[in-house]
Amino acid sequence: MNLKDAVVVEVEERQPGSSNVAKRMRRAGRLPAVLYGGGRDTRPITVDPRQIVTILRSGHGQNTLLSLKVGDGRQQPALIHAYDVDPLSHKLVHADFLRIALDVEIEVAVPIEIVGEALGVRLDHGILDQVVREIQVKCLPADIPDTLPVDVTELGLGATLHISDLRVPDGVEVLADPDQTIVNVAAPTVQLEEVEEVDEALIVEADEPEVIGKGGAEGESDEEG
Image (cartoon, rainbow, N blue to C red; front, top):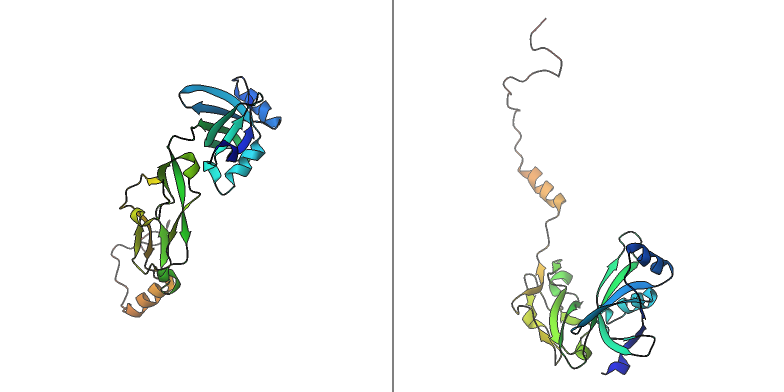
């Protein structure tokens, strides 16, 4: 893959400003952002937030290879390194873009994709517990996988899959501990109703023990008339 295969994102340079300036940019339909890394100065920019949302929702997601294009035609390979979302409106409010070189390996987080239904879940009503949802890998930008699939179909009760069980594409180095658990199948929990039925069967009726010094209701006296 080369830069012509990357997703082109039109960017505009901007002057750093206050939060009020950033709000005006958002109202005008632009997302404040910065471009940094690569041993060069940080550059304030703006982008179309709708395009960034589309990229984040795509198959590659945050690991989509981008070509940031400024007005004069210059292009810069980049990745979305981070982004901020307003907790109330759920709209993008800021994004950070990281400069990259196509011939230099980078470290990124790749999601784990669960494939199939575990045997222990299907037949024994076990519970599939996914311990790890993404792992760090190192590779060239063009080799970043969308996901790292893990097939759980043959997992019975008590079975576990580890990082070392992943099938990793050529050119991709996993940086996580190979002994780390990805997923396991736990035994089903006992239903509360079943526990109550068992407990009731074991109850032995007995006289209520005498409570020494037991008084009357609040405000009543223990002394007789």
